[in-house]
Amino acid sequence: MDSSSLRERQKERRRARIYSVAIELFKRGGFQTTTATDIAKASNVSRGTFFNYYPYKEAVLLDYGSEVMERLRDQAESRLAQGIAPLTVLYEVWDALAEENARERDLFPPLAYEVMNPNPERARTAYQALPLSKVIELILRPLHQSGQMRTDLSLQRISNLIADTYLMVALRWSAYGTERPLQEEMRLALNLLLEGAVRRDLVRQ
Image (cartoon, rainbow, N blue to C red; front, side, top):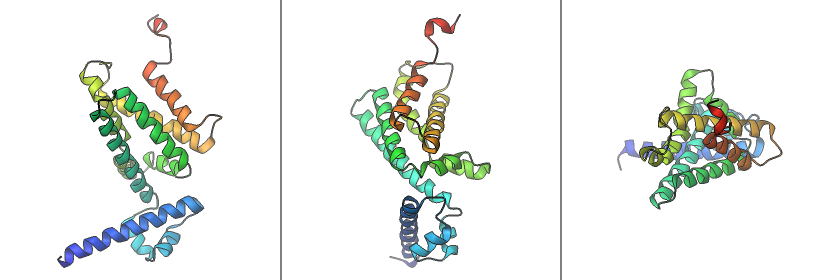
């Protein structure tokens, strides 16, 4: 192994350690109260080294979100390959994401806020790291290709709207809570998106 490959392996291991330590600290002490200095100290690196790997604290959460999205995409691809109906797969993935968010309730709000960061570069980075709309698009594509979806909106836009709805409903639930579990809230939202809010016999009156 040459020296450049060794350095890359060392960098990957260091980043993985910083990430795992940071997530553990976030879960144990809360995201807001955990500082970059806390993470660096617990990871046995300097504060400057932490920022070499993560330019801001929220960037750690983007790695976490990316892992969740990869798992959901793998789940969707596997279930579709088994011949499971796309809408069934969509609800399964929806439930799995709600379960993850409910379990890690304190991590979700800062992650969601990052997608809406007023800094356009940070918002773009977050959007690319959390491609929920791409997972939804993958699931719905068979329905779109078979002509079972509306044609006045593109598949991409429909998928974006569904993903945006998830983001806002889950963010509100994480921040304020409701009398219903998140999974139930999310199913209500998805049903509304798929079925519509107004009785169909009234839509064109």
